[in-house]
Length: 177
Image 1: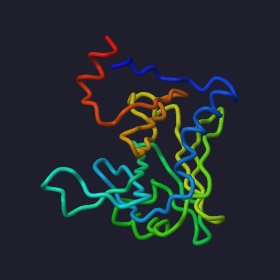
Image 2 (image 1 turned 60 degrees about the vertical axis):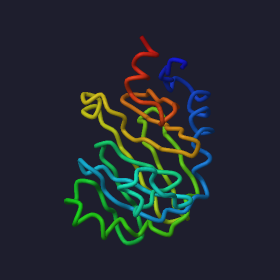
Image 3 (image 1 turned 90 degrees about the horizontal axis):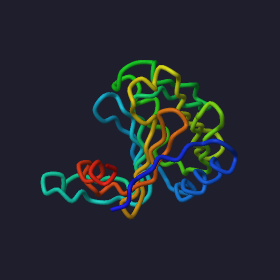
Image 4 (image 1 turned 135 degrees about the horizontal axis):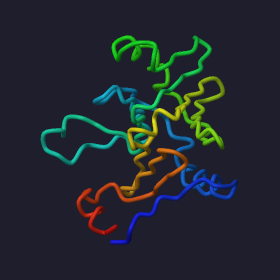
């Protein structure tokens, strides 16, 4: 297996390369908004797929899954702004589930602040807004699981990777040694 080398956004060409990887997300409809461990927000989009594990067969996942990784986020909507700091899961979920049924019309990472904006229709703007404090955890700011077992991770800093999501972490570490 080839070594996964992080790419760094240094110029507009690097930003364009990342944007071309993310283009397949545009046009997908979000059908579920939920939280996973650690208050990480997940948007399930595209086709509904069954999990492979027998104990999860009764659940469905999105063909595309966008998730935050502990980095602050904001939803700008006509109903008002909602931020990850506004409360716990029980408080936030009813306010952000307005994204369910909405189609993604754009996705972009701004440079130099690394703010990700996902636009739903013409009136909902979901933003992941990293700060310098987020870098101390050495975790991506966000990740996007895509069809064909591909995963885009962004952060910390201006680093991003595109890799397979179906390879065990141990095998990835061995291949990069």
